[in-house]
Structures are given as C-alpha cells and as structure tokens.
Length: 318
Image (cartoon, rainbow, N blue to C red):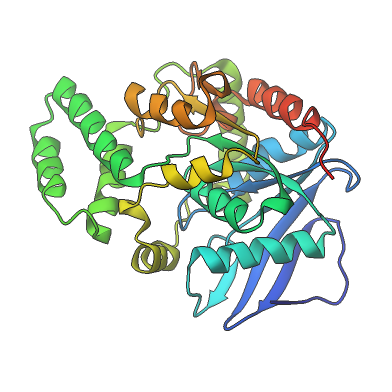
C-alpha cells in the first residue's frame, strides 16, 4: 500500500490518501508528543467513527505522557473509500500504513466494541507492532453477544410492559442470524431498550456528554453511521456469527491485554464477561461501575488513569 501526501504535518487533522486495489482517504488526528508511547484508538461499528473519543478523551490522555492516534476506519465517518473491500486484511494494511507514516514501530491499541476484533486481527498478523490491547466493551464471541443483547432487551421491555417491542424482538430473533437485518435490527432494539445507557450517570459523565452535544463537529459525527462497511464486513468476514475467542487465546501469550466493561453495558451479561476473563485473566478484566458501553465517556477520569498507568508501565521489548 502506498501513502500519498505532500508533507506529513503533526498539526491538526491529517488526511492520508491510500492506493491499493482501491483508493481511500483516511482521516487521522494525533495528540501529544511523538516521542511518547503510542496509543491507537480503534472505534467500533463497523461503520462508526472516532469522534466521541477524539473530542472528549484524546487530548487529556495525551497529557498523561502518551502519543494518541485517532482515525476513522476506511469508509467510516470522515474517511472515504472508493470500492473498499472491507476485510480484516484491508484493515490491517490501513493500520500498517498509518503507523509507518507516523514512524511508530509499536503501539498499544484501545479497542472499542467491534474495534476489539480489528485489534485481534492486527495483533495476529503483526504482533511485532502491538505493545498491548485495551479492550473496551469489546465482544469476543459476536453471535453470543447478539443473543445476550436480545435477552437484555427482552428483560427491559418486559419491565416496561412494552408488548409491541417484545413482538418486534421475537420477529428479529427468528431471522437468519447471519443476515444484516438480524444484526442491525438487534442493535436498533438495543438502543430503544436503553442498553447503552447508564441509569444514574456521574456528574463528570453528564458534563462530558454536554460538551460533546455542544460541539458542532462532535454532534455531527457522533450521529453518523455509514452502511458500506457494515455490509462489506458482514459479507466478506461473516463477523456477526463468528467466535473470536480462539484468536484471542492465540495472541494472549505475546500481547498484554486488559478488558474494561461497563456494569450497565447491555451488550454483555455476567457469563459473557466471565468467558472473556477466562482468556485475558480474571485480574485483567474489570467491570466498571456507573458505566455502559463507552467506558471512556461514562468514567472518563478513571479510564484515562487506568489506560495511562497500564501503557506507561508495560515492560520494554526489543
């Protein structure tokens, strides 16, 4: 893959043009001193973007002595792609090009939601470039996760006596589990059920979200979801029905990992988090109080301290 740019400037937004079998422009934003340990944020989706982390967390994390890289994955948010294939191989190539262009030899990855699968795939292909992975609300078994979401939705709808939503949920549950309608409809019901919400947010979380709502760019991109990556990864990788636990076990011996999961994250239950802990290690997985799917927004200060301490105390490797 070739990167085309006139000159690399670590000021403000950086847009790289990539040429492979197809053309793409990836939106990349960096924070902090390039001499500090590198941390790359991998957003969820597929089809979402890094705006919430970028605007709310990145600079404060960089202030803790890290070089923070945020980017919108190919075809997502502010990044463009013409005829993107949307495969894990392509995603790995894009990450490689970003690291190379920024002269980063190794980085820790903050892997949010679907970004966890991307991080695992990259670590399996390029372990020499991965210093650690911080999983944040990241499922290992995608099919299990969708079933857990449906069960959590059912409990919430039953508590509300919402019979219409219960009927819709049963219709979705009977769909082909490999179809885009099944996964997309499940996530839509999750939003309706409040699976991403914290019942009683902290004062800090309310302040963080108020700042994001008032920020014109954050407001624009946080509500943005692009469908080509969703359909592309589903068709090419069948990610919604795949269990990546074996992949996580493969990379675990060489890649330090921790997992941060909100206690109110409706994409998980106690059993599914326990199975993740069986891979990472029980002492490496934390259930974060007063937090849901986006722990970095719901418990921002705690999250920054946790990640900064973890990354800056990693053992050095040749």
